[in-house]
Length: 250
Image (cartoon, rainbow, N blue to C red; front, top):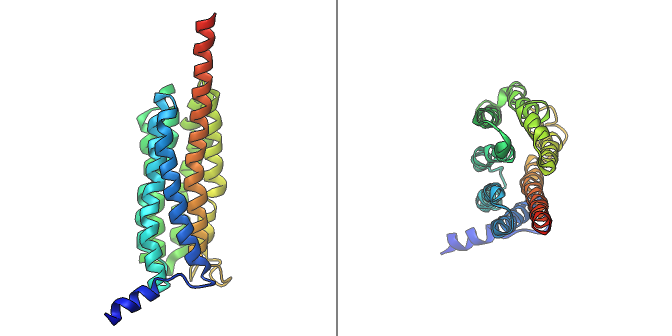
């Protein structure tokens, strides 16, 4: 009984625990985003519903993992590295799938999808090795991991994702790809800061907390990705409806 009471007390969010606060808010905000994306699927054109489903899955998977990461942090005050990488291994490839789903109706090839997924898995596996398995060579593994990141950026900036989106007759697709690319360029740039904040990293002596950085980055990027897709879906659906109405009245 005393052990159970002690466990409950340890799981209470203490005043001033900023990291614990971000675990709680990350969990609830991503859960709420999932509910929103799932409910809005019926309000958009059919070709956008899979994209919103993926958006909801990304934030739902993250919410479940944040629930467990919150518990690890409150009980041990240590970084839940394994849970975090399990989450990323599932959600980051799905975020890359969003790029493919945007261009699929306009000629996007499955080879593009597999390249994006391959880049993301390579980035995550090598990043995990540097953070958890071989921390003595964190900088080297971080540099190797960056190659996968560069591959994703290339596809969205100059590669097949960009090319197909620009040739699409739907301006919302090109706009969405551009915004998602900006999330990869700017939003995903938060994660290397956290990676370098580890002991042995380039910023390891600056007192930065990698969990705080990672938690903020996850909430911004995963919810932001979904909102970009949602915005494109709503705008595209309205444009298509307007065209149909115009044709009927003509």
